[in-house]
Image (cartoon, rainbow, N blue to C red; front, side, top):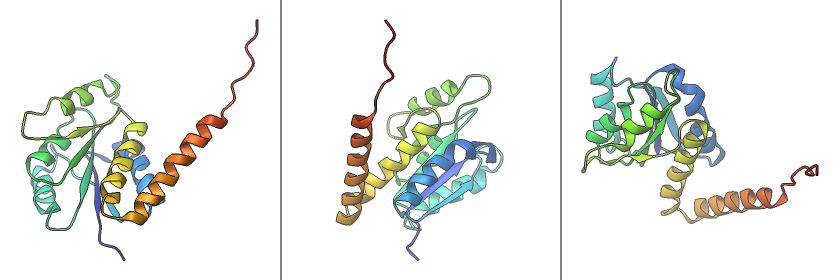
Length: 165
């Protein structure tokens, strides 16, 4: 089996509804990955250990879902040089805007790439991770290019219902 290349982490199991979209994209491209809960608030020692060991374990990127207080992506990024891709998870009260603001306001020197709130952001974070890997893998690049071409073709094939006048 291929070594794990992408880590997918979230602060709680309730974030899985969003983060499963990242995992689905990684699986579609055959990218070896792991998905787990590593809470910045409930298990900070585990979170730090995960981040500190990421590069040594061969991870090429970490997709970190952030709901509620949204500390996970930034805290992980503070403890590793592996690229961290932050996905704001919609919260009950602020619909993920709080998470988005928390991720995009990282201090200079602690970069976190930030994606859209929710499922689209999770899928795009995974596609970004695939693109990172494709820089070193021509076959993967070809598959990503084919995927993008299929998306374009599907968009061109869309028809709109007639407009009543």
